[in-house]
Image (cartoon, rainbow, N blue to C red; front, side, top):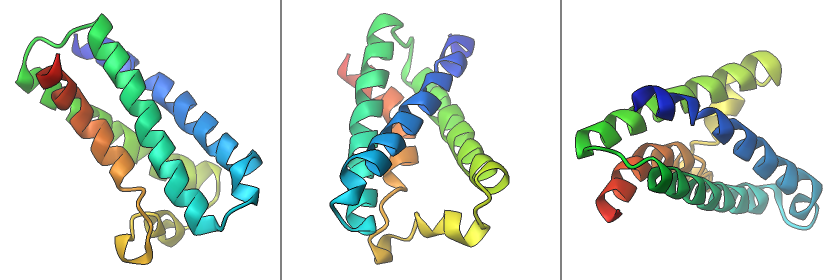
Length: 127
């Protein structure tokens, strides 16, 4: 089951890229950058919730501890991908990448990896 959920993490990259594309091409032109960031965070959380809910419905988790392990695995993969892609491919500085985690500046992106980590356990409980 862990291998299945490891592989199921990869479509989340596509979801994140589509979410960012919609932000940049559609509503990002009509709101401030901070508002676009916040709205994009909300839509990412909702899209990941729908995906993970569907996944846990199709392939039910066996235990709470299994759900926690999967959530932690997804958290590590997500943060590693975000920072490695952001720095080495998108050529963003480490400071710029860390900026999206500054809650005091209204940057709420931290909720995306946290939700990705928590959703397997939460949906295991709800199923």
